[in-house]
Amino acid sequence: MSTTQYAHTESDVWPERLGLNAMASHAASNDTASANPSAHEYQPQLGTRELVAQLRILLASERRAGRLICRYLADLADRVRQRQDPALAAYADELHAARCFFRLGVRDTRTSPYRQSPA
Image (cartoon, rainbow, N blue to C red):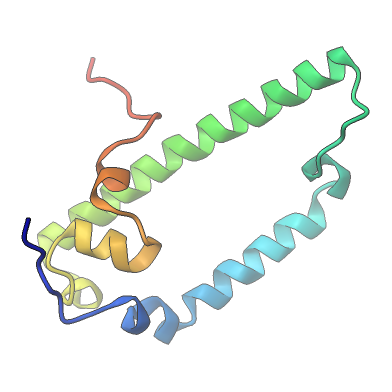
């Protein structure tokens, strides 16, 4: 099995140079601060009803996040393939970009439990 070497690695990915990691970190801290902190912590004392309700909430949230991740990864893939954005010109393909930006392997990028089959 041969591997392709790319000129750009995770250490020189452009989001760090543009401060995008700092923006994501700031957004995450704002989200945590605005939400109920106890809702994001494990609560072993939940009764059965509360446990089921909490699981429903978390699973619905995970599904929404998964759908958005798939859509945004598809948007990123389209932009890499179109070769019109100079910020993405350094990436050989969408798989290379996903690996550098998010440390996703080929399998992680192509498969998703949230992928919907075509209608």
